[in-house]
Image (cartoon, rainbow over all chains, first blue to last red; front, top):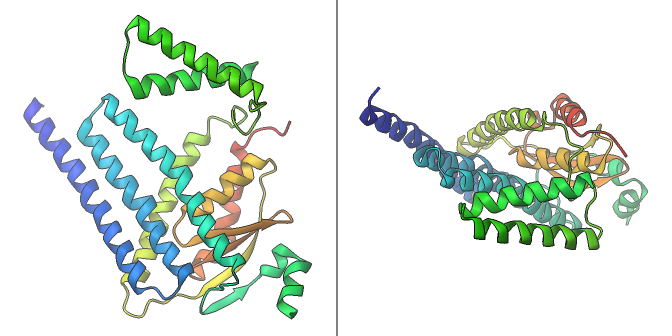
Length: 124
Length: 159
């Protein structure tokens, strides 16, 4: 395998990652517009900042090869893995405390977790 | 002491990864700044299981690989719902029991649930999580039980 075909393979592999990642980001953006409320829109945002962002980082890492840049990209991916659920949880928890409940709610087991506090709230 | 050495090694590895310099003078400066940071962390009593989670098992890396697969699968499921004409969502707020024992295990489990598109951890109380899911499939208790079991395996000992 000579250097030229190796470069070509690398371009193809990173191209696939970019296309799939951008596809997920696009779908996530559609979801932000289409879905009905805060809770379901958070899931669309989740698609963008987990799969979308990580696949694009992976594509960039393939493009960079075994260099320092790849190490930095891996670190960005790691930090994204820790910070994005924290941000999502903060928004979800804030809307929960503000009293917003999901639309078309089928099963609600809030009382099982929060105990008497939630039952008192439900009564009032 | 183990925690201090672990933090020193991790900090210096981060320093090397971000700077990429191997000149002796700069390396010395890097080591000195890492030592100073560890001293400050020690003074602030930050060298505990939370800041330096050495108690986690190395199998954490395998767990991340498995989690990546799960994230991809549920991302595809959520994408199908978004792109379908009638968007068949039926949201649930379910109580999920939490098998991990340590605080670090709770954090990993809750963050794993939130990372997976389609489920979000909303609140934690009384050893349970309140999880919001986009579909009935996402609220399936077996999926949570398996993830919890895997987290309990990697969380390490309670001190």
